[in-house]
Image (cartoon, rainbow, N blue to C red; front, side, top):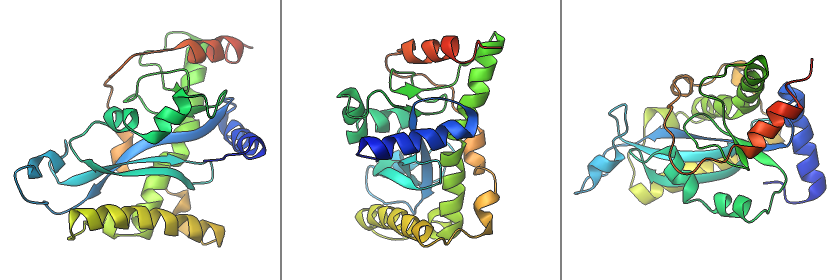
Length: 225
């Protein structure tokens, strides 16, 4: 994550250039990394809603498809919000380490002061404008999943390793992905769309809602003619 104020402002500006949504420092989402059954009494907790075994991996991505934060240790049956609520990054945001900047996430996350989500049923033109901008702004993390799984086929085809080793491999591929970007190894699949599992959003709300930031942005930015 960008630690200095100059770094944060640079990231926020690049996110703003995507769709004019202000104050965004990262896009958060989860993706399922296919694994073999780990065996044992708790093996079924790794079976996700699509009926294959996986590790549900949380990533915060930047505007340029870099991975800024990763959590790779949760079974496939665990909901995205549970992973976020237990993550260190959530604690840093709630302790105002990145204030006044925000994350963007899909409809599977609860709206909070530091986490902007789409409206489930936008009624007005400003609300529709906000939703369109929000979707475009979080698109990089959805594209990022597709890019990483094409760059490292083991993430999509599945791994047959010990559970602890598989988690380490996932984090290692994240590091290698960032190194590839730093070496300008972009490859032509960067222009592909988001991976298919990201198109189907889960409209499940867990935890408290705080829409103050979202409401103020809609009022101040998207009501303008």
